[in-house]
Amino acid sequence: MEKYKIALISDWYFPKVGGIEYSMHALAKTLSMHGHEVNVITRSYPDVPEYSIRDGIPVIRIKSKPFPGQQRFLMPDAYKKLYILLKESNYEIINCHGLDSPIAISALIEARKLGIPVVVTNHSLVGHTLYSSLLYLAGKLFLKNADAVIAVSSAVEKDSKIMTAKPIYRIFNGVDSENEA
Image (cartoon, rainbow, N blue to C red; front, side, top):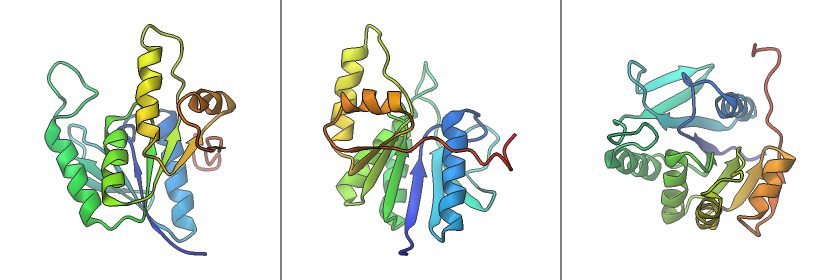
């Protein structure tokens, strides 16, 4: 089996705790156990080192401050740092997690410019809100840059089909029940 240098990218990673965080970490450990070189790329948090290792997985945090008045988007320098990191690190596959993750979306666009294959893992439903049409349109624009799309549930797969005609691979979230509480 070929071995690849893979970056798993999302704003949502430890110390923040949630489904994407656990799913990405379990995937990183499993890919690493199969001989792939895996890095997690995520956003910085106060008092968390820019570089660390969690269960043998290198974690690279893009250091930046949130855009004023909110917490989701980082200042533009973060996205430039991400581009430089992707350009200089020779990743062979980029796996972006979350269509609501600004770092993941930026990585999707930048990886396309750099010619790096991109897999997008969609973890969330758009839902029925006043902004649903706009969110589906944004999803269509982003997913046209993906080489492959993964949905973590049947519901997310159905929702993702509204945004792309590409094949969608349903791979359920997995958690190592022996090591996670």
